[in-house]
Length: 111
Length: 115
Image (cartoon, rainbow over all chains, first blue to last red):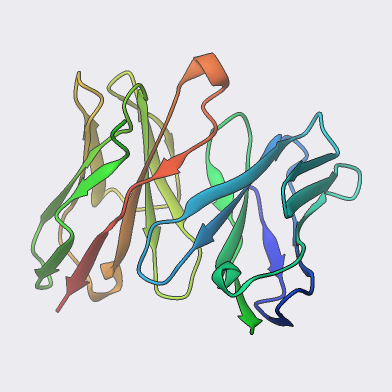
């Protein structure tokens, strides 16, 4: 089955700096890669996603890049703000079949 | 527009008991997936229901079973509870074949504690 690895497990950045979280996957059949933000005690919220026919997608301060050849994808957050502090999870799926999640990255934005 | 809802919010059970968790999908969604999230870990896929049938299943024992009703709501049943079943159980809904089953939206979860 699919194996998703996520790095780093913890990340601290100064407010205004950029943050990058990286994930790798093993199954070349995976074609959908969402990113979720989970604040303490709350549900995971979809913040951005990318499909395998696209190399990059942006939504304001958030961007995701996908390298199908290397089987890795990354989340980029620019101009970080304290409210960006949360746990971020990447995931991979094959046409919405089983979703495989990474182990999460705890992001802390220091004011 | 109602989002994904789950009940109950919290539940405390003892080892060996059985539990039923409930989920109502986001309005317009017809597919429900269940996940187990242990503390400090990512969600682990349990199974997915579409058209009242189990469509996909993760690596969970038969003690975990489910059901989907004609109105698309779903139940997760866990029998013979173990201490290790203590976790946050998340339900996620999505559209089915029309968009390839992706774009899942999560409910708030049910926190299960097994004593």
